[in-house]
Length: 173
Image (cartoon, rainbow, N blue to C red; front, side, top):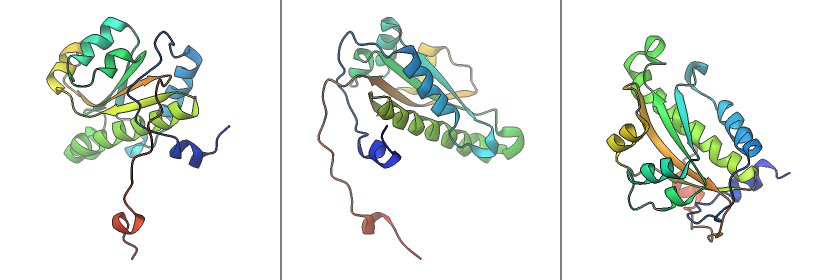
């Protein structure tokens, strides 16, 4: 099994997936278990995850992000939604507006790392038509889609992209 740092180094955005290779239920379960361990404000887990495996459901979801065709081609898509109501009572408007978004984002990041550890690949999609995603998933008003993650066995292994040097992104005080 890979250690954490190997997992992080091997996470890349993959936009081509092997056809006819579904994600095994036990791997999906392990990924979702990892998602449930993500830190969250007040341990409220102010997010909800929609898992789309049906081709027609993924195709409809892709319509909300028309330039992201790999969403429909991947055998699995996950939509991470911020649950705006869960943190409201304890944290007020800041919890609803910020903490719920952070919770959903951290959960999605945990999913991406778990995907790599399971021998799969993923791509994060943040550019989509929010209203169309809400309509496609028939989301209640308190759920706000934050990220779409496509998942599958990679049909490509893209070269690592250049990263900024640490001294450009870190200030030590």
